Length: 317
Image 1: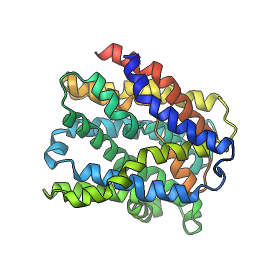
Image 2: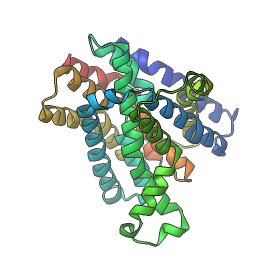
Image 3: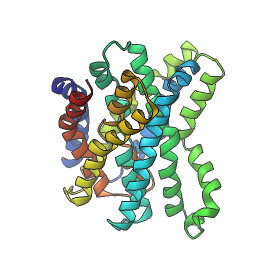
Image 4: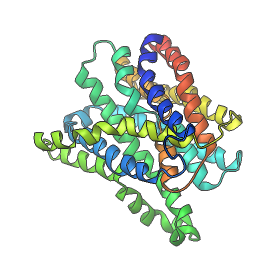
């Protein structure tokens, strides 16, 4: 089990570490990363999400509805709780609290999903594993990301700053839905639901851009983190415990309540138990919001994931 987890996180450490090294040694500018952030968050990642969702047949979405419900509920519950704690215990500003909440509640489905499920779900086909991961990525982008985007829009844009949140829900939600990281997977899902098939030529044309998404995001994350002085404090440890230990237990409880079969229960728990992803840090950087606790949690969660994931494997396999 440990070997499987190590194989899954090795590429993350290499690319993330390379970005950190380039920033630390000033090989690349780690202060002005807006161009790379635009490439990753507005082009590469949306393209990868668009391709993954359009290639997912509508029957797959219907068959995986219990998985969708569990993933979304586990992410929503943790986002709301983390945001509340960030505001009232750690006294973060709303924008920083939203970045912190997204960092902790959204697992790194894109980089870790396939290798972990391939090693843990016995008897599952490669296509079924890919379907589970594609659905998990879509859930995070469509149902969770807009919560943080809405807060960031309100807190960083002058036209929204002083208005009450109750009056801004609709306009902020519309702006969040127009963000490529949210819009493109929605479009891919819509095309799939209409029973269309992504043309081979379009798939081939978009493949280089989609392939650059994971590596580009990890490199950019390392570059951003290299510009900060990271500290392991109470907020970072709290975030790690919530993400790596508490959130999988929440998913397990929801799955038991739904009475899911063992294979689907294990898939939902293993997906939620993945180390935290990079969306929170990326979104924050795009809006000029920095939160060192989010960056520290991302690193600690990824490092100790090699220990926490085998614990859940041992309990469920």
